[in-house]
Amino acid sequence: MPIGRLALHQPFWKGWAFMRQYSGFAEVYDMFMDNVPYDEWARHIAETLKRYSIEKGILLELGCGTGSMTRRLAAMGYDMIGLDYSEEMLAIARDRDAQDSGILYLCQDMRDFELYGTVAAVFSVCGTMNYITTEEDMLKVFKLVNNYLDPQGIFIFDLDTPYEYREVLGDNTIAENREEGSFIWENTFFEDEMINEINLSLFVRDPADEENGQNREYTLYRKYEETHYRRAYTIDKIKELIEAAGMEWIGAYDAESGDEPCEESERIYVIAREKRQDNKLYIK
Image (cartoon, rainbow, N blue to C red; front, top):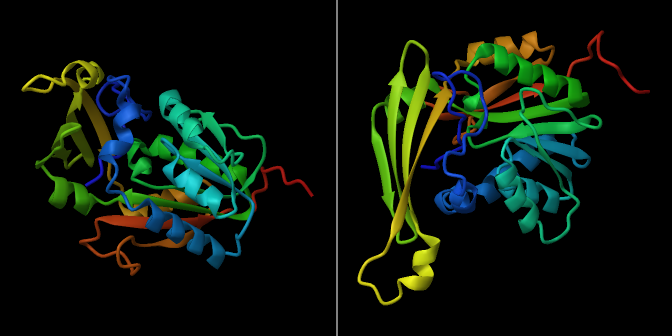
């Protein structure tokens, strides 16, 4: 189970951003995310875009992190923009862009982002949109996406479902132990607010220990703690917000099966399309 993105520690589940209590988390983020099928996800995004005749052009990824998906889509021929709130994450993304692919990385809050022009499509994966914990903020994001999409541009994003938070994560604890680091992931689901609270304890090997602890019988680790808040939304609510933002609702489907979402769907994809707006400036 992937850790997901990190949320800003504000008064109880207010707003969205990425928290960095442990300033070095960006350096170990990919270590704990190595079970995410990025290749499969990238192929799926590209195939979905092709179904809507988007085979080239500029794509924007919201919540790009260290650029794992951004680089893959760039390798498929798209011109990429990666947007994330963490400059640390983006620094790693830029360093790993060894192919000099021309990816533009922007450090911005996706509730208030600005681009230089419109894009053919916008996408977001890994449950990033669940970190938008209020309907007001989700509507802001959707309106901005609609504003920066080309005419008939496509918006694709995934969401963890209420079922995932209630029945799978619930009040469970997930732990993983590795030589280079370990984590304990404690979940609490607040049904009335549809909020999943995550208390994450990270045990990361002390960098100095790798150099100085060769002859020891023990290994030194540092403990860091993070708190995350994620909100589950019903499909009906997301559709309502998409349409309120001026976009056309295309549909939602189960991320695993590709079928219509069911009561036991744990993760879904949502697809929306830019719809001509009277108050939007179109360049002829």
